[in-house]
Image 1: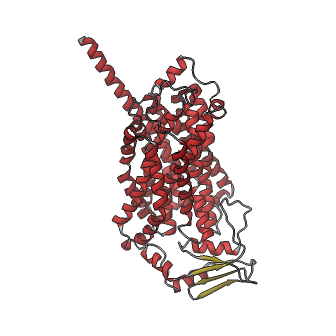
Image 2: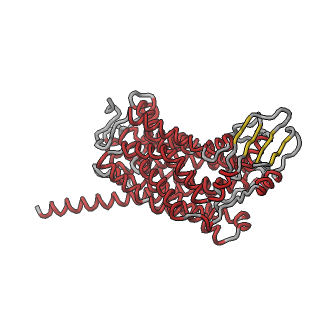
Image 3: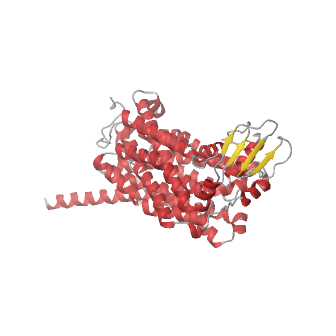
Length: 549
């Protein structure tokens, strides 16, 4: 009996050790992948001047965001490619390939010539590398989440997979830390010349370390079991998306869970950072510190909500996070303006600005053939200054008539060059101060607001991996859960900075872009609340593709 008991204790100890090793290795590798992916996102406004033609700052920014979004748009295709391989060949070897592709494509950005050197070839290559990053990340997340969940004991999947959920935020934080360190230790001219390349080249060392760790992992016990029993799917794409009811659950997972989760994630972290730097004119280092501090404070709550989901269920936490974000985003971003740049808020309240024109466009994807009217250029100048303005019907015989307080500025026709100088002069004469004064920032309240927004992120993101893994049968799990996750995050979430920036420029209101995440989050609350069910008691071994009813 003593020997048997000892063997049981040893066996349990070995299982726990293996579980911790799996969580650590999977999470660490995924942190590095997110670091690679978000380097570009963090530097997107900066890259606008490096890789795109000069002349229109909003156009260049939209181009940078479009390239940023390209990596997200391709993620579902990575989910299909690598999800199929993961369900057929195994979880471990698939996400060894994904991390290799991600690391190499990121390092290549670090040696990419700029627009000034090779012209339009620079953005073309940059987009190609972003597409490779997106494909790799499309296969990475589903593999890591599935792998960890299939190692986790019953009743602890939410807690185990929540460690994977911290990786995106930690990767984002790590990217800001490295970039901030580079910018802090060199002057702006040096960073713009060659210093920006260093964070990308660091990924080579991260790649080697991640590969070394992951090579030591064993295959998922669930996959080994279904493989040995001959239950592995021979056509996971068909079984996932062409067989009912699994295809129904893929669609419901997208609209009722991951779409809202995606926009909450990107609003609370990325859009908050862009709002600080672009709209509120906070310098990069201060913005990194503010957002980074909120990430450090809130990140443990991924584990808190993941663990809580093991006890009370996952869906209700996810939907509550979506609802809170939708109800509070506009007042919270208005509070950011008040506590970060009160001089800008005062100017917005005291000086009325109107733009009278009939030919303003709504530009999301900016191409070499895109034409910008003088109305677009006027709005560009005002939007880049973080200002609200009203668009009114045009004046006959005038291309654009802009009023800034008592100042009236006219663009007679669409011909000729456009200069921002008269507009900047009018702003200066009416009391516009521009950049945020660091001495006027209320740091405690600002960090509190940003932390609350990241807490929403932890609510929706902490339980989502366990929820998606439990929704789908083991033999098509990698494929089925990866697609809705990456469409929700890559398309609905990844498009947020691009769509929101275009909405702000068109509407003339720095808060107008928030209606996009609010609408998507509310859609998820309704669909998820009506059509999705709780999954917390799912048995990972005994589910097959016929279990849904």
